[in-house]
Amino acid sequence: MAGICLGLLAVTAGAQDAPERQPIQIKWGISAGINRYTEPDIMRLTGPEVGLHSRITQWAEMPMTHFEGDILLGRQHYTSKSSGSMNGVTNFETRWRALHPLFSDTPTDQGFFAGLALHTLWNDMRGTSYYQGTSYGGYERSAKQLWLPMRWASGDLWDIDAGLLIYGRHTSMLSEANSSYQDIVNTQHRGQYIQVSMNLKLDNGDNLRPFVRHTHLADSNTVAMGGKNWVEPNSHRWQIGVVWEFNPLKK
Image 1 (spheres, rainbow, N blue to C red):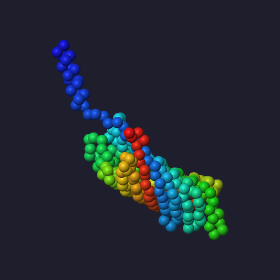
Image 2: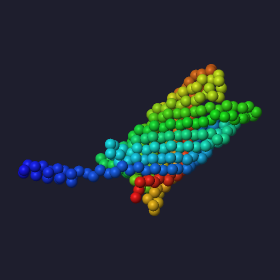
Image 3: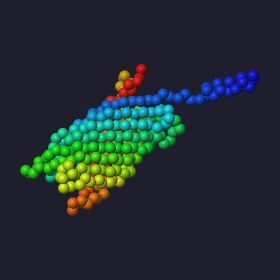
Image 4: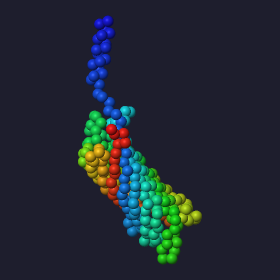
């Protein structure tokens, strides 16, 4: 009997000392902004963009890791020095990342983070543009990219995000523009992005997060086809907007 009593006391003490598990935190956001993509001296895409965003923290299986996703849809105006212009170009972008704190043994929203991210892009440039009496056919473009994301977060005021490209594959469906062409796949190995965002708390507990983001990709490899060398050229993308972030389960 004494042994049973001691055992019960030990179990009770252990339960009191065990840290309380925090419930999973899920936040959603919607955004509006402007997306401007340029290939210097070649072409430009500019237009409005809306987004859906999510953040998951305190997941029981991996409580230290932040899981985040962004889905962005834009309608852009295309202009080129050599092939004219086109309206209503669809731009669809997704970003998925997992970030882990570097210098903390407990779940946190502050400090330095690093992880892994997957980005995808689909650009629907099918249609016809005109320049100096000549018509030009467009085509779809898509990309998949693996990134090394990093973050420096204050917790309540601001976040600074940056990333280095690990590997990217860019597909140009040139056969849609000219049946004599083949589709081209270029690989990309050099690129960076940086994003600065602020955190403005509202009285109802929601947050407004204005942001500015710049992404740069260097020239891809060269693919020979049809007597030409095809390169996905150096590009710059600016995205400026604001995210309204909320917790649908808040009391």
